[in-house]
Structures are given as structure tokens and as C-alpha cells.
Image (cartoon, rainbow, N blue to C red; front, side, top):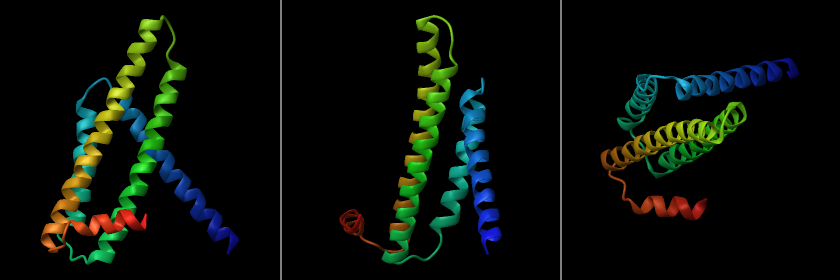
Length: 143
């Protein structure tokens, strides 16, 4: 049993490493098309997989909690990428400021896309399942 647990933990750590490496490549890419391609493909597939399914208030709460965890992980990863960029930029103060500003702007774009995709996803899920928006107030009270 311990071997299976260790294998699962190593696989999960490997997937998280791949995720942060992908974010690092996209944030540091010289072309803006890489960031747009990543954001559109990830967010479109997320919206498509959740929107057209039947949900009740309990299932929607689980999806909302999953989105909170996903946003926390994304904030953590983007924060690590900003720290990495801050530690690797050398040169004058203006060059350092420019490098950090670039990474911060890319991170802000990624977070904005993620928040927008989650907002659209939850709006469609609530509409198609005829759930009132007050259900999110109940979720906030629970959390």
C-alpha cells in the first residue's frame, strides 16, 4: 500500500511540475501567441466540460470549491514565477524593473483570463440548471 501511495504522490508532483514549467515557458515566451493559445485551449475545454451537464446546488458547490483550489494553485505558481524572474534578472535597476513588470503583466493576464472563464462557466451553469444566484451567498457563508 505504501508503494502505491508513493507512486501516486510522485506522479502528482510530476504533473504539478509540468504545469509550472508550462506556465514558465508561456510567461517567458517572446511571442504573445503562446499565452493566448494556452489560455484559450485550457479555458475553452474547462467551460465545455462543465457547462452542459446537469448540476444541483450541492454539485455546484463542489465545482466552486474546485475553482477556489485551482485559483489558489495558480496564484501560488504565478507568485513562484515572479520570484524566479526577480531572482534571475540582472543588470541595471531599469532592466530589473522592466523584467519584473513583464512577468507581472503576463501573470495578471493569466489570472484575468482564468477569472473570466470561471465567471462565464458559473453563469452558464446557474442559468442552464435554473439555480438562483443567491446560492453563491450560501456558499460564501459555508466557506
